[in-house]
Image (cartoon, rainbow, N blue to C red; front, side, top):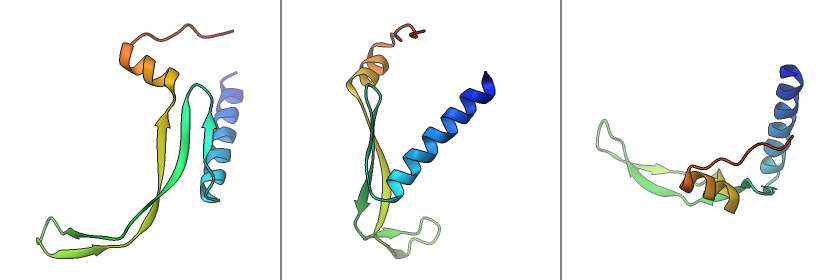
Length: 83
């Protein structure tokens, strides 16, 4: 049902978020890998004033698509869903 699908998706997203929060990566075979990456501190410009500002180091979530997903995106051919 729609409610069960929503519950399953929410549980999956929560598990991915929990793993990333701990610094772990999550691989979904045939789909891709979610990982945490560190961005170094850097200098930037305030677009409104043009003033130079310091942008602090931080962690960001990254996603690398798997082979199967990349192929679907590049060819536009979506395989039939398995029942």
